[in-house]
Image (tube, rainbow, N blue to C red):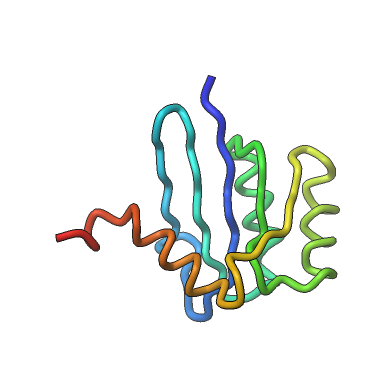
Length: 106
């Protein structure tokens, strides 16, 4: 059985639908979802749960109240974590995503 998790991260100006990246490798599905504003994290998290994601990580930049709102919204249906890519979470997430973007490799 495949496993699935998602990373939601803040990126000003991002489109959570158009800029979403889904990676499928060796039975593992990872979804990277940039949000332009922390207020969208709850609705995105609920969508991901409905899509069958088994773990959600909020990556850097999310204040504790925003994390708490996501945890409350998913009501224990999936674990929610809060991680950072380091001091520059947006740059880290973009760099991670670029590793898997076929258009970024010559």
